[in-house]
Image 1 (spheres, rainbow, N blue to C red):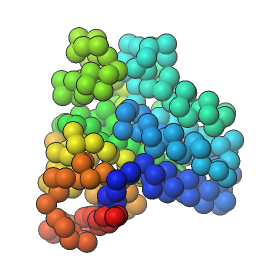
Image 2: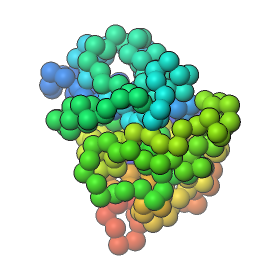
Image 3: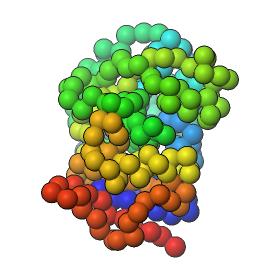
Image 4: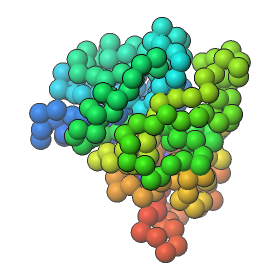
Length: 257
């Protein structure tokens, strides 16, 4: 796992995502991507959709998760977020939006029908990956799951301004499974902000465990974690390379500036 720390992690993450999309599209007809949502992804996606030279007409888009019980008219809908912040500015024609009121089986079949080339993700304050709250299911092969959202996750949504209070936050969601996300050929994870520092520290320096779902990223062969100085502030290592004992997984840290 590669860890990149800078003042503005969205910029290098967008540069990498753009370069990866161009490389994929130079080698094959279509690039299949997974897109994350939330406040941590706003600047990254804003920069990415402005990158020149990406043929978005050849991109097929899926997203990670959606609340159960809300539709695309709700301000917190992730389908709405994806539509407004990615689909409209790029003109992507081939996309699959999860419906909080509907059946997700067709989207799940489409997702599992071919490899995902590139996935974007974030890490939650409780260490979740997509809406896989701890303890996450590391074993299921189902592409999408219906999950219960824990209180820490729901409080994060209030804190980010998506809902007025905890009682307004849905208690269930559709989320991509951990195994399905880990099948992506390349993973770019953008995690800014001091409030994510504890989760980042546990992800990188604790055990790989369902209790810290994002820790599984250390076992991905091509995962990139983009941090700012705040989200990296609790990491204890200043070494260039750190490998977990008795494991092939680890992470490489590059601090810029």
